[in-house]
Length: 478
Image 1 (cartoon, one colour):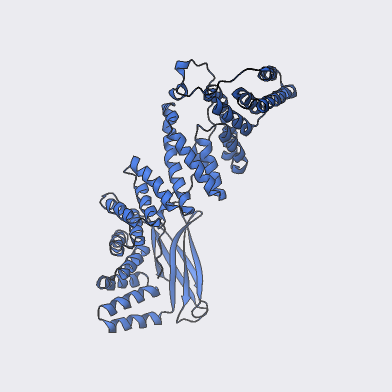
Image 2 (cartoon, rainbow, N blue to C red):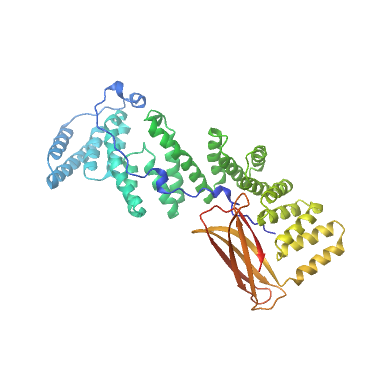
């Protein structure tokens, strides 16, 4: 017997992958060029190891002259000098691959030629040999990052994310000490189904935001990055769920909860991740802690009940589903799940009453009658059980698979009508009342179904346009 989730059943997916705007993709303000003394440098730069200092030779001298000539020229002439400087630097790399200056000069030429990815690779190699080259490359990298990022941001804001992507990728290739490009690339990759790459980039952005270098940055910038941190973590965890890497998702949520013990969404999602990864005991501990909170909404309780159900804690799941139903009597799914949880918990005395309530709320639900009949048999009331089954068999049709799902512009109630005792060709009209988490009506929608042959089901979808947030629904037969 399947367990059907309501609209917030998969609460771990409540956070859809964020849009570009939330990652700060507006045109960014670039750094101002200035001179630094050793004491002015951030501590992480001062702490860099010496490595192998660069050496001058005929090829570095030649490349230096060509780079100077390029900077004082323009147009094709400047480009020609940069290409000659690149060739000279490449000769130096081949002749003396341990001299960081050749890589640095190659990076400068490539950067001027617009090859940010190639420049990034050359600067990386120069810094590997001589880490203190970062003092010279940092500004060059960040300035190029701003230019590439802002080009991408303009295209993204105009709605052309595919055209924006290579600019964001260029920005990321040249500079990895800012998270904004990483977040935008990750969001686009995730939309394209490149989930492993997206998860990796979200991870990189988290590492940048939490890095010691970031701690020394401008306080206002750090505050903005703090907003990005939760976005990156939640989206990374969501991707892990899509990849069925549930234990990894649990680690991400655990990190959020450790830093923010009051984050209800993270706590709930942590419990769901524990269940999905087979860590039922840990999940139960989290649920027990959650249930002590006085601030839980009906939506929170519904998500907790689903987690308890998935942990095979049917009796406690039934109790929480009952609480949801009592708070929002129009939530048909809460009542259905309450009834089914009682059935699986073998709590038949309470199931008799719950199944009758479900039949009243969902009078064409075949499963509700079967729950009622089974409970009556277990309670020694076989005669009444037979009556329930006869009433079920007399129904003209069954309504099955009801679910409230989000769609563009609002919500839809989907389900199926199955012909039972009625004749094919008859018409069924159902009206659905959709409510919010406080039980207030969001709107109504109707479905009209022509019955197919006996025993055959006809699917339907009843759409509701609204900008309000729905929680559940009830229905009536017209």
